[in-house]
Image (cartoon, rainbow, N blue to C red; front, side, top):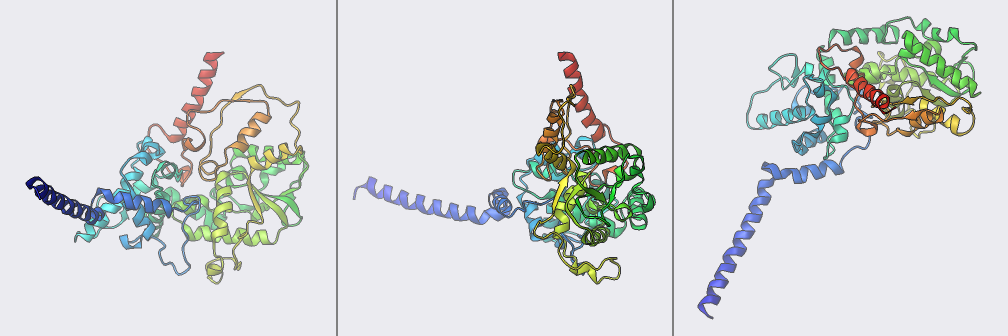
Amino acid sequence: MSVFGANAETLHWLTWWSHSLLALGFIAWIPYAKPFHMLSSFANVITRDEKAGARLPGVPADLDATNVEDIDDFTWKDILDQDACTKCGRCSSVCPAKASDRPLDPRNVILDLKSYREDLDAGGDDKPIIADGGTSVINTETMESCMSCMACMDACPVEIEHLNSFTKLNRQMTDQGDVSSSMQDVFQNVMQDGNTFGNSQRNRADWADDLAFDVTDAREKEVDYLWYVGDYPSYDERNKQVARSLATILEEADVSFGILFEDEKYDGNDIRRVGEEFLYIELAGHHVETWEDCEFDNIVCTDPHSYNTFKNEYPELDFEEFADDPIMPFEYDEYWNENGDIDVLHWTQAVEELVENGDLELSGTELEYTVTYHDPCHLGRYNDEYEAPRELIRATGCDLEEMPRNRSNSFCCGGGGGGLWMDFDEEPKPSEERLREALLIVHTFINLY
């Protein structure tokens, strides 16, 4: 063999073994370095829950894993979410709380939890997971800032389920009594009076007194549509007009509909998202037990929040776990609507269906207006319903001009996740920013014509 051949053979041997050792070393290094995202991100994507956020994790009756008192209370999926974060910041860029200078950055919450977990593994000191002060991993004001809009989850390229972890942090806050005084007042109103306003349940259907017809009591007569009116259309003066308008539309379409009168209570969606899980279960139990005594085909909701919780969350509750609890004022012991036999509809879906079927005639009522439309988070991003409201707008003859951020990219109005009852010194408020976008459409239209 020539000298060149011998050298080439030696060089090949050295190169082959060097490459093998480097490859094996790289594989062993992956769990401790940034390339770990190649594994954790892929695993996070394939284990994602398609209904995460719209359907929050439940709580067993024995109170196990109600909250996150320490880092070990997070589930394996929560931990995987933390490891999967690539620090890209897409969640931060779409967060309405961050845009309003509230102390919330969804990326930082996930990364702070991961950093604390790694610090504990390295022998670091224990800290409260969430508390009002600088010694905790997460500050209570940070989580109070979240509006549960799910924009962070929708933008995340690796399917991190922020809202599941955020809700557990909120449950811990509630368990510790660290929720704001305004939220405590809401909890008290719901517990005592069944509604967030603290008004008498006997007055819940007073909005219907000014109608030219009587609204059916769904507890006494079979109806096609059992209409869940909601707190704001029942008690807020401006929103009572919305309730009367929808009642008039349903009456004009000649469909049978009814309401529960004083047996209707708050749906529980938003108090659940700020951590009051067991009051939510109490409300859910009351409603499904009441519905069982009624005869109807569909449930129609005025509010996207109640639409989401009735459609996605009530059917997930194992009421049998709680039926024997003396604190829970219900005896219902089954899963409700487990097979989806009862359709849950937002009012835009129900009315759009009536128009499409010819039950509601809109000819001769063309409105020559240019309008814009705000996609509610709980209707659009939560449940992918974008077309029914737009079809209704077009059916009236209006010209629809979309806002710059629309459909799945819609900007939150700030009312979700308890935002209706929170006071923040922020500029601009999410609602004001959304109104600015609507006014931009108006100004653009005026300038064009």
